[in-house]
Each structure stands twice: as C-alpha cells, then as structure tokens.
Amino acid sequence: MSKLFSPLTIKDVTFSNRIVISPMCTYSAIDGFASDWHLVHLGSRAVGGAGLIIIEATAVSAEGRISAHDLGIYKEEHIEMLERITAFIHQQGAVAGIQLAHAGRKAGCARSWEGGKQLKKEEGGWTTIAPSEVAFNSDDEIPEALSIEGIKMIISNFRRAALRSYKAGFRVVEIHAAHGYLLHQFLSPLSNHRTDEYGGSFENRIRLLVQVVEAVKEVWPQNLPLFVRISATDWVEGGWNVDESVKLAHILKQLGVDLIDTSSGGMVPYAKIPLAPGYQVSFAERIKREVGIMTGAVGLITDAQQAEDILQQEQADLILIARESLRNPYFPLNAAKQLGDDIDWPIQYLRGKL
Image 1 (cartoon, one colour):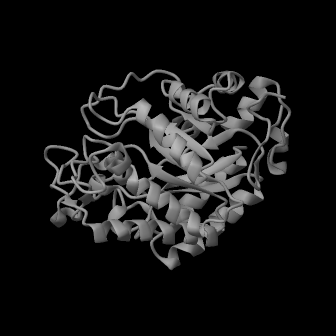
Image 2 (cartoon, one colour; image 1 turned 180 degrees about the vertical axis):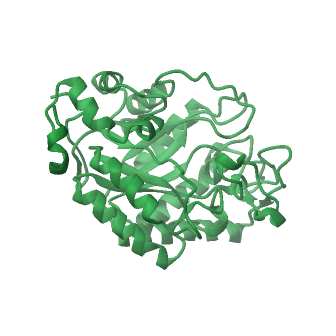
C-alpha cells in the first residue's frame, strides 16, 4: 500500500489515510451558524475518502470573523449544528477537525465573490482589532490596538471555543496563526509595532500564540491532537521568516503541539509569492527535520503521485488538499486508484468502483 493511504495515529486518534481536507472559507453562515450547506459540503468530502476534514476558519468571537458570513463558535447555540456535522463525518470513517481563528485587522470584509474589500460600518463592517494601529490595505480603516485586557479576552475566547469544539464532537483542534490573521499579526514585525511585552523581540511577538496554546490545552483533552497552522514566511524582507518559524516550532513542540500545518504568506498585500506546485513543501520539510515534530504540507498539491512523493521523501506527515478538493470532492477515491491501492468505498457507491 502507498504511504498516502497508510494510517497515521496521533495520540488516541487514527486517521485512515494521510489526506486532509484543508480548512477553506465558504462564507455561507448566518451569525456564525453552520447550515445544511456546511453539512453537505463537508460531508461529501468525508464520503470522498479523506482521513481528516478540517472545517473552515471558525471565529472565536463575532468581531473575529473575516466576513459576516463566517462560521463561528462563540455561542453555545453554535454547537448543535456542528455536532450534527461531526457525527456525519465520523460515520463515514473520517475524523472531524476544526480551525479556530480570529481575523484581527483582516475582519469585517465582503465575501470573496463580492469583491472581498473591508466594509465600512454603514456597509455592514465593524471596528477591527490588531496588535498595532496598522491597516492591511491602505484604504482599510485603521484597526484599534489591543489593550492588555483585550488580549486577555482573546485568550479566553480561544479557550472557550476549544471547549465548545470538544462538546461539538471534534477530535482535532487547529489554532490558526497564519495568513495574516490576528495571531500571525502578533508574530510579524510588519504588523506588530508594540513596545510592551507583546511586541519587539521574538519572545514577545510569540507570547500571545504561546498563551493561546496554553489556554486551549487547559480544556482540550490530552489524548486528542492539537495542530497549529503557521505562515512559515511573510515573503517580505523584514517580516516573519523561516528561521523564526523553526524556532517557534521548537517551542510549540515543548508546549505539546502535535503537528505544524505549514503554509505561508497573507501578511501584506504586496508580497511576491513564487506560486508553483508544492511551493511550500520545503518549509514543512525543514521544520519536520530540524524540530522533530510532525508537519502537514499544503499548497498547490493536486496529484496523487505528487502527494505520495512528499510522504516517501519524509518531507511531511500529512497532505492537505484545498482547491483540488473543491474541484473534486472524491479526490482520495481517485488517488487510491491512481496509486494502485484498494481502499474501502462507501457501500452506497460500490457500483461505481472500478
């Protein structure tokens, strides 16, 4: 059997294969509530054979949403529908995971198909928060710099969201510290101009993420996996870089994080990113080898053999599929055929198995 379709056990959770559906926003929630859209969207990818389904960035507070249509887990009432979704995913033999997020200065935007620009309050936007009063785009509203009390509230929001995630049946939690959102904003000197204990030095800039991880671990069961997604580099001189990512990964490993989901970019709109198949794999490989922690590879991975080669070369432990899974929810079933693996299909679909 290929490595792509061999099982992987992290703590008490076994993934049937190494294919992960990467969290991808669909901007289809109302007041943070999941709907039948999310059940069908995520459920179809579980039926399609992925080992782990991580639902899209799910806001830990209302003001932490990228758009007013983002999923949220800032109310107890959000749990009911999410519990229905996790139950269906698990019925298909996949594992349900959730990405906990706060958009920071990149919040309050229109949906991507509506232009994606940040909305003014009269357009349905809201005042955003950030480490410093530095906007993402030149025409965005200036965010409010978080006070120490505000930072404590952010940490508390992540803790409560993790507890709700467990109640909703998720078996993996991923903390979103990438793509220019709030936790990444604290990491990067491009957006963090603070002079207190949360800014300046590397140790100060990582402080919020470290405290969020510690708070999540207070309520997240020790026997269930904890992931952190990072942007390994801002792709801009003077920004967060790969050396710092390796240093951070050492600390996250000591804190008990099980896997680094290794992405990049998103901090500033002018970054020049050399997009190409597997363009971020080298970051996952370096962190895995130098830190001795499991990593996930993501970014323009679209082919079964490409994914298999990454695993065979021990560049990563999991393969996260994003846009390719939007084009083909059944990518894992097709990938198994391409690699010559005979895997279980949903019994309802057996007539289509060749």
